[in-house]
Length: 213
Image 1 (cartoon, rainbow, N blue to C red):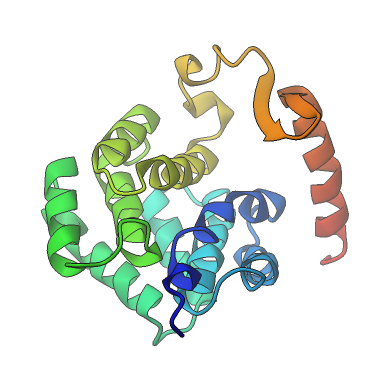
Image 2 (image 1 turned 45 degrees about the horizontal axis):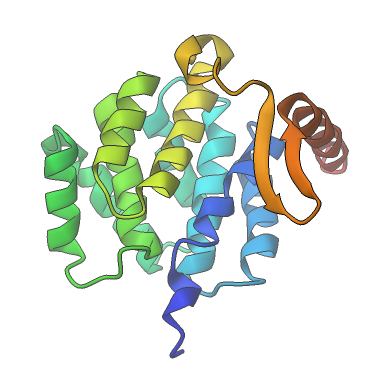
């Protein structure tokens, strides 16, 4: 109970693979996210990963990021603080026009909350999607400009809008400079080929998905 880390964003930022592994299956994505999150987090730390995994999974089956955000609410407890924060952010979206207003609203709502907590950062992710819609560049630019744990919030927002618009909807300038390479801090594995990672992930996703059919 005295460990604040358990509700910080560390599990939330692991949402992406579960959503990718369960396209159109938010319940399955949330289940996998729960199994992962409970190893390191508790309460809203867990619900954050469950929520955004479900949202990413739903995003593959809808044509509006905001619809995916609504669907994700069905996979976390109705009365938890994470659900309350999401509902607040969705309600406020109509009043938020840019990153400055988004940050000001979150700072007021969650005054004193740690900068890497799940709740305040989740709301910024939602605001970034509300501002940018299906414009990938605008979503990324607005979300990262909001601050707090902006590398994480922007990555999650990017996953959601990317799943909605698909590969053709992502401007080439966001992908062309990676040279098929991922640099890592893993001992004795400083580099990975993106193509290889995608192929390995696809094999695992097919196995996991097949078990639920």
